[in-house]
Amino acid sequence: MKTEDGKSVQMITLYYLDGGDVKLAHYCMAGNQPAMRGTYSRETKTLTFDLVSISNPEERR
Image (tube, rainbow, N blue to C red; front, side, top):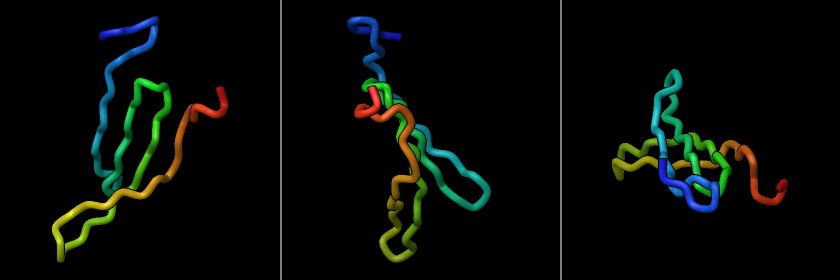
């Protein structure tokens, strides 16, 4: 894993099914991890994600 000043500079976003829900977990190089729940639109064939929670938000540091 690439690091810069001891911090990871790589990010990853995971999309997964949780029961009938599509969810997203993003692991950010800033150290926070937003979690989102997706809603599918059949008309536009798109997923829209709403924020559910954030672990380690910057303001708590």
